[in-house]
Amino acid sequence: IFKETRYRSIMWNFPTTSGECRPDVFATCGNRHYCFPTSCSPLFVCWEMLSKKNSPKLRGCIGSLTPRYLHDALEEYALHSSLRDTRFEPIQNSELPLLMCKVSLLHSTELSSHCFDWNIGKHGIIVQFEDRSGMLNLDKTWSATYLPDVAMQEGWSKVKTIDSLIRKTGYEGCITDDLRNSLEVTRYESSVTKMTFQEYSSEQDRKLLRKF
Image (cartoon, rainbow, N blue to C red):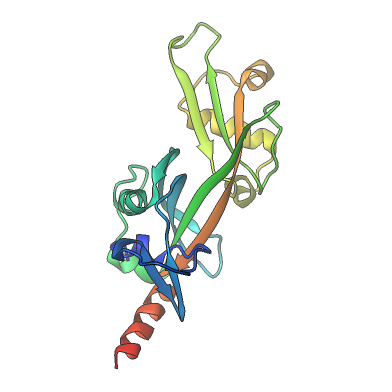
């Protein structure tokens, strides 16, 4: 599944209409054929473990806020997020049946007017700030992001989300209203496509049947 992620895990609305498509940008799903254009986008590749009783559990997520060529970045981040995200143990073969891959392409990026100028469930946010207390490294810029679905999945308020994101940067100082008001907050939206291992396996089975 890791090997095929860039071909199978995302099925954007790019149906083939004309011209040839190189093998590394061609994918099929059922009877539909897709050709992925050579384009750049900020993106994240995340892996989640599914559960019938609980919300999906994150098993790895890595990406870039800087636009990357999708063909290379999808393969790179699929491998890094599944095997090399230092927050988690590498994904094991035994976990595959319950695994889901989620790819987010970021778009509609704009600077927020204040730290709460964004909508839960719609916007991802990036916070940047410098420590003005004089207690920590004055030359350091602190920065971190949450994707649009994080606050909703966690059941967080905007204040909780902002405070959690400040901690995610590694900042250990006191979180005050002055600090929150000093934040530079950028909001963005994302186009998300998901594929479970079961869906991937079913598609592979259909391919084998068509060969016969």
